[in-house]
Image (cartoon, rainbow, N blue to C red; front, side, top):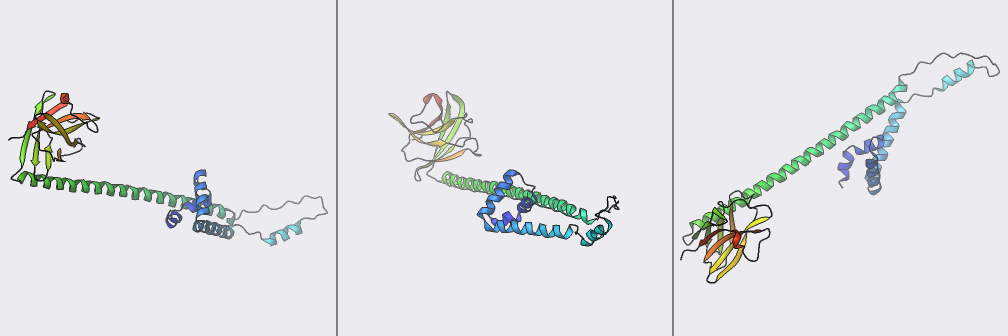
Length: 264
């Protein structure tokens, strides 16, 4: 807890003025027990208000009492009418000062809350901007890596055609054998349903032996739909199936979306 910021917020003045809720009063009281600086500040505020009240509160004027005694005969039953006293302006000054003080403290408290909200909004905007910058940098790095792979003279390009479950689907594999890496261009695949994910398989054809090389995760939020995956296999073909979220140990051939053979 930042004690200086808490004291500067104006909540202690409202606590002394008695305008806080029960929960807020309890919070301030607990903080005062924990932090001597807060308790000291509360005592200073109370002392200031007492000083102000004494300065504006009407005096008792002892000479008024002496005058009154002279006009009353204690041994007489006669009722003596006393002139009506005019109310002094000072009798209202204490109330006016209290009202103005409370209003001022309430305004200051609201201003501090508004400032806190603005700071929090700015902090959230900065976090969002930082995330966008990080995503942009990651996208740039992926683009550079893809361009490096595409320009490699030893690159192997494997087109993957649509299968029975989705004849119009297509994809392309860019395989850099020396770096043991593949880039999957999945722009031709439909968005997977909720709870499902595309899984990429490296295949040996005789006998048919599939090995998973990864999932095309965050498919809906990936703007260019190009995915980098490791591939240490001596692949003869590549296939992409639709599997439950998290992937499967073996491919569901009924959900085989694309398939392509590596040119010999």
